[in-house]
Length: 331
Image (cartoon, rainbow, N blue to C red; front, side, top):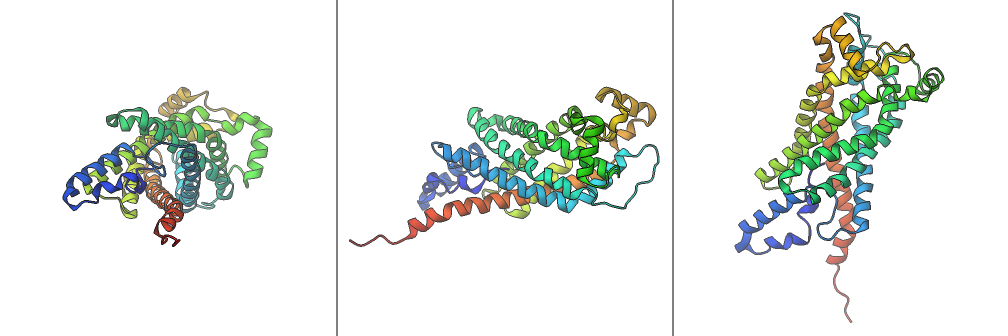
C-alpha cells in the first residue's frame, strides 16, 4: 500500500516539461512521492469525493488481494495451525488441507476490504499531520487502526477456520452453531485479546516495513516500481514480520482452539503452561510454514493490491484523458 503513480501524474507533472530543468524536475517529483505516499488520492486540495474514493478503492483492492492470498496459501496455513495445536510429538494429519476454506473466504473478503479501506484514509490523514521524517509512525499507526477495525470480522473467522483445520467441525455453519450453543456468542471471539496482541503488531510492522522499503527503493531507482519489485518487497516484509510474531501466533492459536474446556485462563497462563510443559521451543512451533506462508502471501497480497489499485486509478483517469485529447469543436 505504498505510493501510487498518481503522485507523479498530478497537476505538478508540468515541472519536468523543460529539458533544461530535468534534474530539478526529478528532485521535485521525488519529494512529492515521499510526502504524498498514499494511493489513489489526487494531490492538491482534498475534496470529499477524494476521501470516499480512497475508502472505496481500498475496499476493492484489499478484498481482492485477501481472497487471492487465502485461496492460494490455505493448505500451508492449515499445516501451520496443526503444528501449533499439536502437543508433544503428535502426528500432523495431512488430510483435508482445504477444510474450512469456503467459510473462511466469507470472512476474509470483508475483513481484508475493511482493513485496507480503513488503513488507506488513516495513512493519508496521518501523513498530512506528521512531518515527513515521521512517515514510519504514520504507517505503524495506520496499520494498527486498520487491524482493530478488521478484527471485528477477522476473529470469528479465525476461530471457525482454526477449529475446522484441527478437525473439530465438518462445516462452517455447524461450527458457528455449535460454538454459540456451547460457549455463547463470546465463543466466536475466543482469544480476542491474544489475536490483537499478535495482529496489531503484525499489521503495524508489516505495512511499515513494506511502505518504508518501497519509498526508499523508489527514491533510489528514481522511477515507479514494477509488479515484480512490489511483490519482492511484500515478500520480504511478510516473511520478516511473520518470524518476529510467531510466539504471539502460537499463543493466539492455543487460546482459540481450546474450546469450552478453558485449558488456559488467559494469555499469561497460556505462556506459563507452554513453557512449563513443552519448553521455550514450543513458542516457535510452525515458524517454518508461517514464514513461508506469510512471505509468499505478502508477495501475492501486495502484488495484487498494487496492481488492482493501479487498474482502478487508470480507469478513473480514462474519462478525463479522453476528454482532454478530443479535438476542440469548431464554431
